[in-house]
Image 1 (spheres, rainbow, N blue to C red):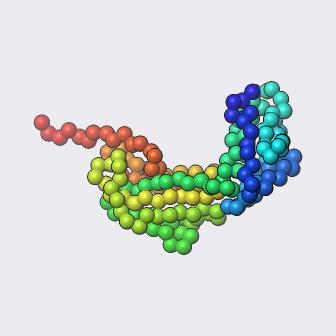
Image 2 (cartoon, rainbow, N blue to C red):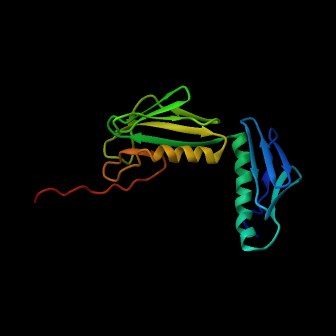
Image 3 (spheres, rainbow, N blue to C red):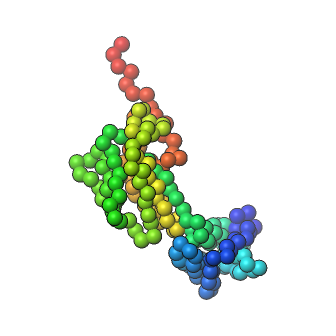
Length: 191
């Protein structure tokens, strides 16, 4: 039995869960999410909780048992409290600005990069620059990606980070706030 898969999922008071075969629909104050589970996993409502069980003992069923439970639990968490992904951009002239539903990123290219925000995703940008920890004297901006779909929040964060990943010498670039960058020593110079 999967240690994660066997844990029950509590249903908060403002959340409505609809089970239709393999399809799970979770509706809450922040939005609605739906998921179609694989054949080897099923969800059962019992005493105001959701239990995820597997239909067989095959390797595939055991693998998807914990995954299915985690996905359903993330749906319940997302529609109640939502998910956040704090990020930082560090470097001389590197900036982030939000105008309407469009995020504009200046990251050392000859042109600004604009990203249209998907539905259900919001971004908060700290308007003033501050020193970024883990860099060599770099100023930067902090911003937070928020949403009720964990996968959409993570996908957008990865897409933004891929624009200018942090480099290992000065720490310039876009990174997750909790990400640790090991800075390399530069050239030693003439002797």
